[in-house]
Amino acid sequence: MQACGELLLVRGRPCLNLKEAAENYRALLDLSAVFGNGNPVKLEVGSGNGGFLLELAAREPETNFLAVEVCTNVILTAMERTRTKGLPNVRFLNIPAETIPCYIPAGSIEEIFLNFSTPLPAKGCERQRLTSPRFLSIYRDILVPHGRITQKTDSAVFFEWSLVQFAGNGFEVVAETRDLHRSPYAEGNIVTEYEANFLSQGKPICMARAVKIV
Image (cartoon, rainbow, N blue to C red; front, top):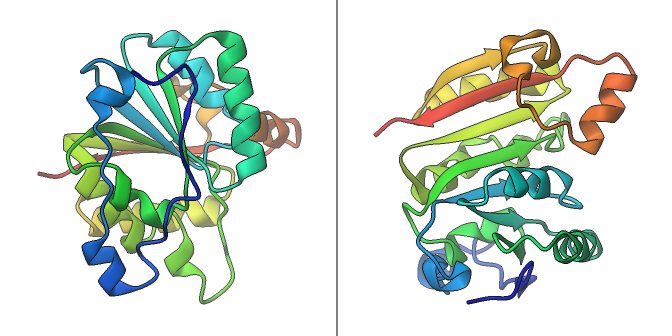
């Protein structure tokens, strides 16, 4: 069993930059061994300093949580916060999101959280967006049957674009709102630091929940 808040990988070997590497390189984690139990696993892609995931882990002690974050300094802060809180159900992967299939087994994740991913509005950056077909294919592979993605963003343009991508890439959008904090979905919502900042500026928060179509 890994220690509380342990970093599993530091800047894992790239695998999706080259097609051959993507197809051949695998170092899949045994998640039951990593957490020391067979509890369901949820994943946040782009976890930042961990505020959202740590709150959720405290609320759901019988669920395991993986945090993927590419920025080493940021993930170290999240690890320290995890250890301070004494949360045994959180682990970290310091890897680019593109390399997720190298380490996370197919059909092993119950839910994926995409909280305020960078919208990347510039033309030509579509492929890098975390709700692009490229990434949705990755998510479909690692999600369990009927597993789901929950997305929050302050960018209405990115949100509308993401809804189209979900519908066209094997997901059914089962919940959506363009003003989360004035909707029924506000109950139980964990307000991230980015979210609090956007709210202070009067920006509405968009939220979507998409379920993998089997």
